[in-house]
Length: 112
Image (cartoon, rainbow, N blue to C red):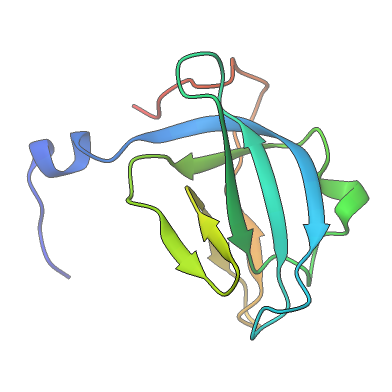
């Protein structure tokens, strides 16, 4: 594992957002949704392609808070541009489990 500096970590904008829309993404190579997340007034809304279909339905995701990286450059994923990275962990079956705050916090709050 590569050690990083505090400055390296501080440069990553890990922010809380609320999922406000979820669409199927049939053109994705692996099953995925197109997710729209509200990161608050300062950051606004951002879209992402997220391979989270194993544990979550679209209905499960609406209104759920997630942790996302908001300062990566946009990445073209098939026909959409992903503007954030929704974070999570692989379970024992390599299916994604979302990283979420324990309690509701303001959209845009930064992970410390």
